[in-house]
Image 1: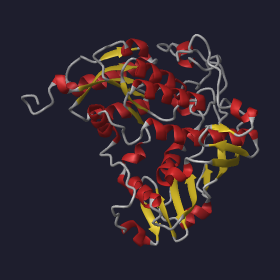
Image 2: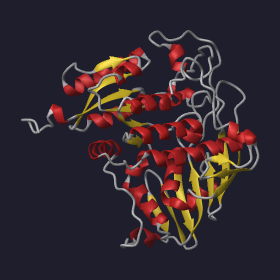
Image 3: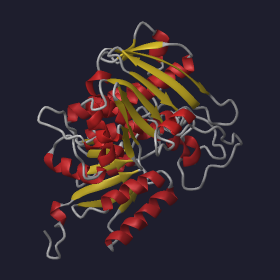
Length: 411
């Protein structure tokens, strides 16, 4: 400890924040709150964004020791940096994360994992090989409401599990296709990176729009849907990880503007374990009426004797007494987290898996991708959960991969 009760600099975890736009800045703030960590560098392709984040760090510490970088590779070369946060555009997530792991950095990476399932698999392989600590940005696992709901479901407190309802906000149509100058202070070719080249359009690089362009993201199927899907997997446990799952769905693909990710989707997944999952890009009226406090996102576990519903505001159940059930020695309990940033720092020190490790990240990511592929192909598919591929379906399996534009194949 320092003389003022703080943590000595030699004991602090030095962090570089890569991608410090709106979400990345919020993640960075989460680590600024902890005295045993220090943000020593920020990186963003947008000059005005990285300089703004640098000023925030300088103001927080009362010095000017935080260095700003345009290129994440230069940041990763610093041997004094222990860990990184990654909150770039989605299509850069995995490339940066793999480079960070190979550079010996632990990491907190925002969701989703990228634009193809192959990328998620590749990152998992690198994390395993390098032994780095990896925390995924599914921060609902650090909320006691979601932990309670998932533990109750995992132990079938509502009776044997039958159905899981999952919903999130839908993607949006729109996007102005009009050509526009590249903003000063942005390396646009590098912003595009591994994605196909397109001329710069009015709002292509805006956070409110690239989310919904398939070259850079899967839309809210992954960008928002991963949150309630992750809780479904957490509470479903091994019943959702073995055997096969039939998946079919529909959704609206916008045909006007630059946005082309599915909106208003409705996907059904039937597991060989007997559980059915319904995943929707909206809150159905009947679910809103049935589950008190239902919002635009949520997860419901239904069993033979009742249900458990959770979102970021409430956890409730029918019968209500389910929420007060005691857990015994034979019950399966989940990891407890004091907060995603705090949990990340603790696990960096202990070299243990965080509450949202790489394995669960890939499990949830798979559901996002197979749902999107089923919507786009418009037919029933069968996914082998162990082999991580579609059964006897070359067309569907081809969609698990995406070409990477040179020279940005930095895997």
